Structures are given as C-alpha cells and as structure tokens.
Length: 154
Image: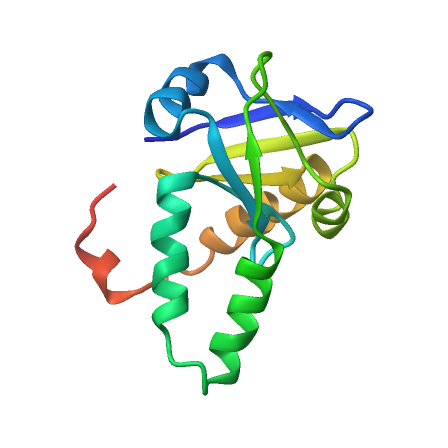
C-alpha cells in the first residue's frame, strides 16, 4: 500500500529516486518492474507496479472498442505506457514525452494512491491541492461525490 506525499528532484537525465520507504515493497511486489503512463484527467503521471498495471490494462482491453471514450482512454493510457525499472540506486528514468506531458522539470511530487503513485510537477500540485482544499471548504454539499463514499466516516 503506497501512501504519503514526497517532494523529490529530477536529475539532469530525467531520473527520479524512489524514496527508500517504498523500494523494498516495490522489489518484493514486482522486482522493481514498473509502468509509467499519463493520467487521462489531470496533468500528472501514474506509476504502477507491473502486476497492478497489467490488471488495469486487461480491463481496458476488454472494454467495448466501439465507444469513442474507451478508444481515447486506451490511446492515452496504453499508448503512453512505458515500462521502467528501478536501477541499482532506486531511480527510474522518465522519458521526455511523459515529462513534457506533466510539465515535470526539476521539483516533483510523488503521491501514494494505494496501488499506484501519481507524479506531479511541484507547482501544479500545489495549485491543484489549494483548489481542492478551497472547494472542500464550501457550503458542505457533497457535489460530485459518489454515493459509495456517503457511508465513509473520516
């Protein structure tokens, strides 16, 4: 289970060091084999352990291809999916097209999301987080919250 917010730096080659606290789990779970792809809704990247990505990919491939939305989602997620591996120093190399998509330059934020990570440009993350926090301070309405979350007490 991956959780937490980590501010990291990319080196001049576009490599990002995965925090030590996640490396052992990634080695056990997937032998350091990961898949990096774009997020279809936000300007960030998604980093999956290979087995978790393969499950997502199987589900995407099974969706009906007559739907434009399904084809678009496949093109984005599967089309940009790039296999990467933790190197001996616990780093992954992020290809330039993916870094460009997410606007990643030097400072990035790695956010645990349970079975995967999100990778954001630090400025984009800070702006987006402020918007989300501001929206949650509204009038107490649930907005577009799924019904399943109604019974979740935090």
